[in-house]
Length: 369
Image (cartoon, rainbow, N blue to C red; front, side, top):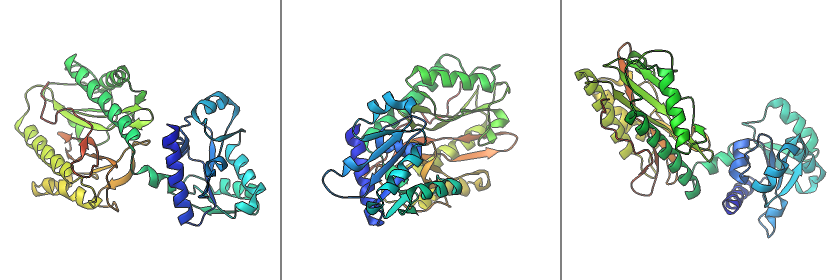
């Protein structure tokens, strides 16, 4: 991965020069992982903007002694400094070379006001400048290494759900908590490092709560079962929701399920390179509104996924911008009937120049178990 990380740092340099910054102090751990591959819990990084031979040799990584060996293995291509106060140590180095550090960016979206003051004092004559979102902007479009990790994470979730259903995991008498724990365990069996987030399992009327937390509620024949879950692989998150019925579906269940399935298909079809995020949301939302259930669609259509479970872009009426090839997004419309039950269907997709690539492959037909 060192070559991929080097390319990402070069792309960051291009952005820094466009903002007339001499360097940036990166302190967010996920951004550091993206730029270096380091997965520890304490680190900082200085990336210089210079576009010249040997520019990489000026990039400095810092972590503490607990990660000495790990840093040697994960960050072999950069200068490494070992010190507990990683951000402060690098800020001090910036101050010691103030002649080449006139304007230095810092991740103001992650640094507290108090910490900024401490770093600015250490940086001395170098001007510490707010520089939010530079690495996150690069993270919007995934490279093929990242997409493969997402593909593997989605496959682990698909296989776990198939196993759960095949082995009778959704049988009357079980609790939401029991099903959630089994689903998490089965994702581990299929190569996940863990779940992407707290797994949502919702039976019956609880399925009408969009982000219900599993309880001791007992599964009964006739219940909807809404399952929102994902797997974590190499730091990348999958996200999928499927809703099934225990026993024979009632007419009202078939009606709202088919409505959500049609809406979700419209949303997936709208995931095109260059599409406005609000228009993607509208494509799915209009299907539900036209059927008279607009007030029961209680959230945005989707969001980006990657090193975080919720990343930009936001596919909603409050979102902004356009989607581009290489972005990974979810499409997850829902209809929630309070006191009765709800349906959500969600996929993770990668935007491609033509048809989006679907990463979550479990059927979206209504399954009765």
